[in-house]
Image 1 (cartoon, rainbow, N blue to C red):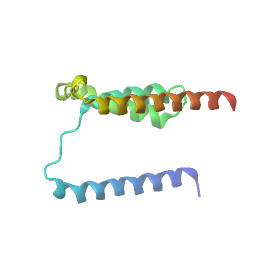
Image 2: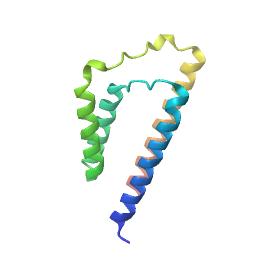
Image 3: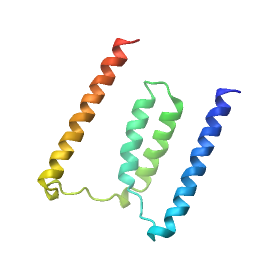
Image 4: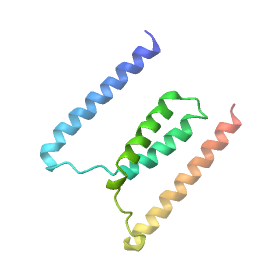
Length: 116
């Protein structure tokens, strides 16, 4: 089979799975929450910027879609959480997650550069 057919089948399975999860949890948790459109905007910028140099048309097109979705709903952006409201232990965990993420990014960059 062709790679395109495999990709379409996997994409369809993922979409059906997401639909089933959404339908199953909607009644359990009550009214669905409104999405955070600011997150869509940020995700769109990141995907668009990463998709162009990687020459991945799917990534930059989805990034453009998320970017437009976020900009179209700019009035519904949620306010950022006050950083001082986090407890000391939460801030420590946040710093640890940020540090591990940065180290993983650096390790990935070194690996990418080392093995052309």
